[in-house]
Amino acid sequence: MKWSETTWRRIQPIYSKILDMPFIKQLTDGSLPLEQFQYYIRQDSAYLENFGRALSLIAARAHEVEDILSFSRFAEGAIVVENALHESFFKEYNIEKNTEISPVTHHYTHYLKSTAALDQVEVAMAAVLPCFWIYKAVGDVIYNNQSDLENPYKKWIETYSGEEFEILVNQAINTCDRVAATCTTAQQERMHEAFLAATKLEFMFWDSASNLRKWPF
Ligand SMILES: Cc1ncc(CO)c(N)n1
Ligand SMILES: Cc1ncsc1CCO
Image (cartoon, rainbow, N blue to C red):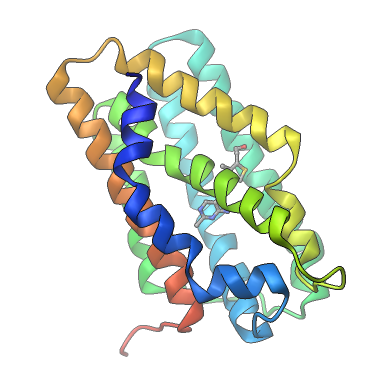
């Protein structure tokens, strides 16, 4: 079995919990309270900026020229999406710009950047993979279950359900499979652990928006 098939199977219990989250259900039917969406977009802007940095670090550390190119493109894509948030979502949804980074965003972005800087590069590639794969999978489920044509979050829903994003996601998955094939079993296991950790953080990222989580001080 491919590394990606094994890793996707292993995270199924968490993936099911993600699909059951109130945030996802309410985004799908359009009933998500605006305050939660605003919180989410502000945090996602900070997330994408740092995700872009992590992807650039991986590009710099990749062994193969084709992977330097892919991860440089991914990094650019993340910053382009971040820019789009500022150009449209911040204005349309009346979102304040200067936000304090939340505890979960802080943890997730620092986890990705330290993994990208210090871990084996194959492990770093596995750590960023849920950002692609979970969003593609969840984006498709939301897109296919939209119940309300007037959904105020329609534009967001379209970001991750297009063919363009799908191509990048498949590229990220295939890259992980190719590099995993060069790794020892122990190294592949560390790739699984990184994929699992980032999947949990994807759950927590939405959970944090649902609860408008803040620092205690
Ligand atoms: C938290 C998070 N994970 C993944 C993506 C998609 O890359 C995103 N925009 N935000
Ligand atoms: C995963 C992801 N999220 C926003 S853009 C992107 C793909 C990289 O361009």
